[in-house]
Image 1: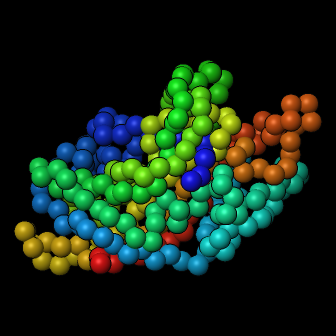
Image 2: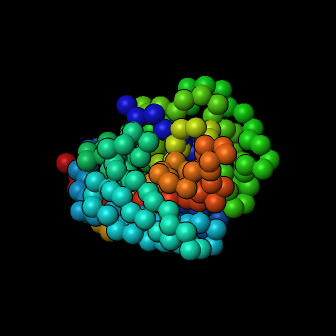
Length: 261
């Protein structure tokens, strides 16, 4: 079990700012749609690419790096100063995409009226302590907690739970939220609200015989606050990462495909 600092985003509110809940269909999109959708219920086998792409954002600067599927070390130079990351997927505080979107997933469409809504049982993090409002200078625009979500005050642990997703109105694409409802606690690493999975859907038939058969052009990504994964640039006075590090973000993504079992 991995202990992490997670940013679980509250969902299932149509007015949410999360783009995937609104969708490309306009308004509340597929979230409120009662039209037919392909049946994706059941077990799916997921296959991954052999590399992961890393994007580090510090202020307005973006740095990209490709690593092997198991992660690794890399360095960047920002404003003339070197910074190093250790993104080894074996580290307990590093949650790589394949760990939150496993090699076999179970999908269900439990709401008979809203067929475009889907749930996937995956490893999910939860707060084992209380949550509280974040300090004003630690949230808002430009921080890892832009919506000032409540902050977990205890350890964040990994368990198994349902992640929520939406199938597009046309039935040829889905988006899945791998985050949840509280923000980083400044101690444990936390996945940010950008964490998610999306793919195109291939299907056969129509109406009651409309069956999803394959996932193509998929991408799964996990995002973290920069201070989680920094191995250098520690402020000697505080013993903590520098402020520029704490304000950074790290996004890890990898391609995938899926087939119904």
